[in-house]
Amino acid sequence: MDKEKRDKYYILLERLTDYINDMNGFDHAGYKTVIEEICELFHISKGSTEFYRSLSDERLGNGDIMCDFDNGKGDIAVIEKRMVTPSKAVVKGFIYQSKDDIPMTEEEKEKVDIMLRSIIAFVARKRLQRLLETFAYNDDAGYPNVASYKRFLDWQNEQTGLVGFTTCCLNLRHFSVINREIGRELGDAVMRSYYRLLSEIVGEDGIVCRLGGDNFIMAFRNGYMDTLTDIFSGIPVAYDKDGENRVEVSASVGLFVIPEGFVLTGFDSVMEKIIPASQVARNSEGAAMVYFDERMMKRKNDSVRIQRLFPVAIAEKEFKVFYQPKVDINTGLLVGAEALCRWFHDGKIVSPAEFIPVLEQGPDICKLDFYMLDLVCADIRRWIDEGKNPVRVSVNMSRKHLVDVDLLRHIMEIIDRYEIPHHYVEIELTETTTDVEFKDLKRVVNGLQLEGVCTAVDDFGVGYSSLNLIREIPWNILKIDRCFLPEDDKSQYDTTTLMYKHVVSMAHDIGLECVTEGVETKEQVDILKHYQCDIAQGFYFDRPLPVEEFEDRMKKGKYDLVE
Ligand code: C2E
Ligand code: MG
Ligand code: MG
Image (cartoon, rainbow, N blue to C red):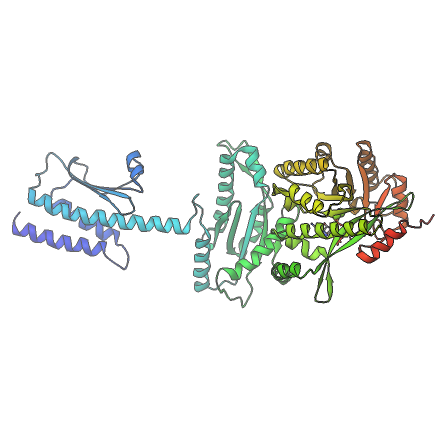
């Protein structure tokens, strides 16, 4: 190697190092020119690198090949370099000459080798950075993740501010059903198509990210709202190449239109708006879009407050049992009662409608139900001991219990601790929505049956009433919800009346006792009589009563019936 060539080499090496270490960004065009000059100087016909994310990817040949120079003249590999990074990624470099080229001397090879080493170290660094970026801003399935969303909001906030933007959280409706029907793999493809559609609509003016499962968050300029509304309310998405097989995909969406004066104080400041709105949307039927309003914030704060107060409230015995009588409408006899929970807090009585749904979001409801059962059993024990003639009392058990494999044992333990005959206790359970729950429900009801504890389907007619539920599970009692009870007997042919009539007669035919809830008027008592539902529970006879008052009713044992 003569001096001139050596000097040229040192200049090129310095330029190469400058390009690959440039902190201000990578100048690809400049880098390529140096590579070309290097190849020319050493009579190289082709130079390429390969990158593999892991050793197994290398084995499978699953990598990226990058060619920085190729004059198309030949490919005798003269230098090969392989480097394994500490994280076990692999980078390889190859230098080729053609048979017409002047072969490199050993010294020249040494010099090229030095350059190739710098190049593969640089490729490793750059590719790993890109990978890291991919991992940081995308989830496993390749969807942009929350970090991308945050980056978009921050960037947009800095550029123009966020006024004029809407952000939302969406849940794909019934996606588990879609998965079940077409299979998971096609389900994934459907989700991806829906995602693509959304992100194509908002383009550079927005972002769509996956939160996890079938939940997504978006931010976009308000102008796209109309188009997006169509997509949210449902579109057919093809899941085969020909587009012949399609499923309807829709979303429930909680939105927040970013108002004038909004200060972005981090990710939470938008999430705390769109999450509650999306929960409301999710709980409403049909495709729904719900805009955030301040009342949602209040409800959320109330929930947090209740969850925080609960442990103290239960320790301080702030929860009491109220008993609502069940009456035989033919004889006026008091035949049973439902135990309903009341929370005495800060000198006020809090209704279960306020706290039960909150407690049902976590495991606290189970603690409360067992506590209630305990109070009821203690009362029944006392009534027996005092020679009062107790009636059967029903206790509500939330559906949340069903996953507890020890539920039956737990219930029996409480009843038996007070040594009360099992027939004094009845357990009310509501209808279930999923197959898994259905199996658990069947197991629990069967178990209670064997123990001689009565079971009732509560709120029949609200939600997912299924005839299967009645056919396959050996209940004793069907409690018809008040929404099924006609308000008056003016029309015998309206749907509510007809359904009420048939539900009662079906219950009787299959041997179930029938209780109608929410009986408020004399007219309704007459309807019960007419359709032969013998037992009523409702304000017409009594509201849920404190224990002392209920004991008075038990003592009397009978209601006067007005003819
Ligand atoms: P539920 O089990 O269906 O109880 C019947 C509800 O209907 C009670 O409301 C009762 O006060 C109300 N009600 C009874 N008669 C009438 C009437 O004539 N008209 C009207 N408008 N309403 C009537 P409450 O006590 O507010 O309880 C609401 C729900 O809270 C209960 O519905 C039950 O699902 C739940 N709940 C109450 N206590 C407990 C408990 O200890 N554990 C669990 N898991 N849930 C409970
Ligand atoms: Mg009930
Ligand atoms: Mg009910």
